Length: 236
Ligand SMILES: C[S@@+](CC[C@H](N)C(=O)[O-])C[C@H]1O[C@@H](n2cnc3c(N)ncnc32)[C@H](O)[C@@H]1O
Image (tube, rainbow, N blue to C red; front, side, top):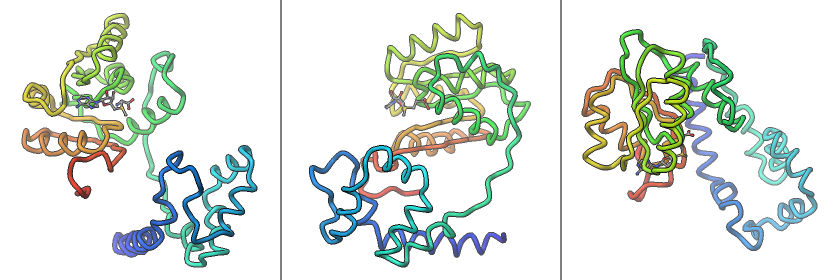
């Protein structure tokens, strides 16, 4: 599909989401009562669902759209507007033993992420930004000849990640640092390719700014929690 058609699709989806934000914006677990009092039929339907039925609906978002379209016909467009072809990705050969102890979904994310990240043989140092225990970094260190600098502010996670790297002789160096500190800048500057998986809100925005300023060869981010920012609105 030409890019201009994606733009139309994206614009339509954005408009729909904005118009119906009162429907999807309420935070799960944050309300003592269902927060859609303007639509008693919706609340009544939701109240009839048991946990397993709720799980089935959760696994079938297009059917949810169909159901909601009974009350708001415009929502019938959601399956079409969210339908985009999947990116073709080259499978990365990974030693599955590295995934031992990594939660299943996390390992699947890492696989998909690495399959999508363009790698260059000239890369000597990867930066793993807000690394947690360094699950991503270990997969990178094991599947490329490059070194990995993993930055994380929780000391216990740094210690666990470093211990794993040493035990498995992986070229990973943890840095126990605040991502917003001056010291973190020098770690960014020494790397060629910055990686960030689930660096929330301002953490990935800061990386994007600093990695551009440091003129890194490549930046590959897959962020989350865009609302965790000090500013009022997120600037994509
Ligand atoms: C959602 S976790 C993602 C961890 C890992 N990248 C993953 O995908 O499993 C975000 C991580 O960012 C770290 N973090 C939060 N604020 C930070 C900061 N100011 N500096 C460095 N790391 C930070 C947290 O401790 C946490 O490990």
